[in-house]
Length: 120
Image (cartoon, rainbow, N blue to C red; front, side, top):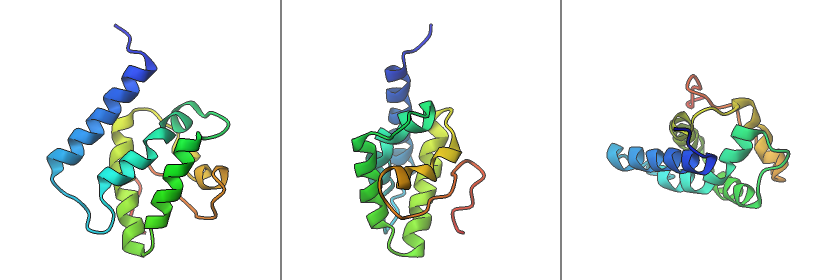
């Protein structure tokens, strides 16, 4: 039986929430639950390559980018994104660097996939 996009998205989001809860590991600087919640609306942009991210996506990206003050903060955010995106399913990691510009931000994001070294 084929799942609808909404059901697939919700299943992916639920998996992310379960992972966060079961890991019992909240990062000191930026909790993964906050990062995932804020950028979840960006999933359709990353999976479907829509021309422009939603306003909710941009709002979340702006909020999360404001949390990335130190190098450790940015590494923690990257790791949260890496873990969350691993559960989303197919997406284009090359669209991640396009998010800030599409949302009117000057921050730089690398393509994030399972091979990304977030410590760099």
